[in-house]
Image (tube, rainbow, N blue to C red; front, side):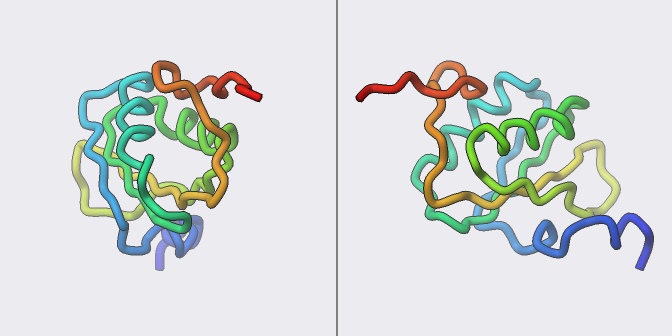
Length: 109
């Protein structure tokens, strides 16, 4: 086991329920695709995001913090030009705007 393996939560290496290819997408497009693709998945589902966005290690944990999903970290994988990150869906995510997934949805009460 390498130091990188020890630093990666075991849950991040779980087989994903969904893999999203975000190759070539930057933050905005990546979050829009992620939000749309997970909309109908059940709580507890593990999602792997394949991305070339250099900001993903900052954007994905921040988005998970906003929505309540659990950020699991970087997934160990074979050397490629894409990084892979994992998250686990919560049962009660904070709704976000469809056009701006980094903003909470307006309260409609």
